Image (cartoon, rainbow, N blue to C red; front, side, top):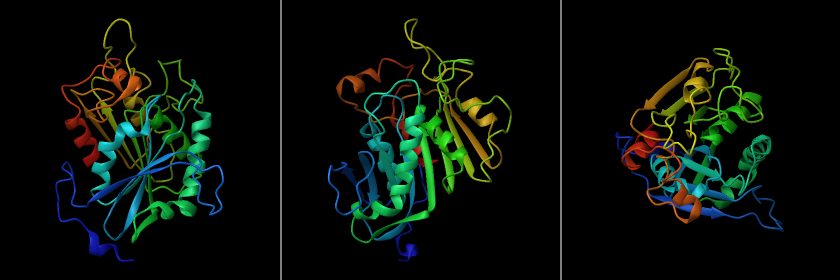
Length: 272
């Protein structure tokens, strides 16, 4: 299938792209005779038009739902990507080992099952696979990439967090505090940080992306090629949808120091 017939004409990556997108929810089935059952529930956003599109595996933050990122992944998909956002867990403790394992299983499943759930004439280009994660999902993305079990085209950490503080990393620790220690065999890395992530909202809650275990430290350990952006006046959860529902959704407005609105942060992250 020739991807050249579906290249968007828009050059402004910070606006919604030219592809019409469709959001697809996939639930694992108890009995799967077709062999295409995913290891975890998925939220997939794909262009609706015919094409051969790169794939981005996107990992949610700690105790968040993948649906909270619907607007962000729609933005990305509208520029010609298939975005796969698994729900890694409903409840989790401090240890992220199981999430790393599950993400590896999902990445293996992509070649076997993803095409079964995409719109007709949409083909995933898994030779161009990117891995991205927000918050703890960023930590998981780096941890899996460092195993070198995946062939990645790009690795993206969106305000990644490796624990509560220096010396209080959550298992398994990813940061080594050795500059340029992340040897990813030339995979391009993008780290995006929030300026307000390391600021406490109030005296009762810790910072959501504490200094010493956040984006700055992840970038320092990256090898070239690596790129780093900090969105100064926005917070750790400003990449989420404008309206996040339920108890967890409401909590996203009061746990972290936030910027004035979420749209600007989403557009910046989606465009990069």
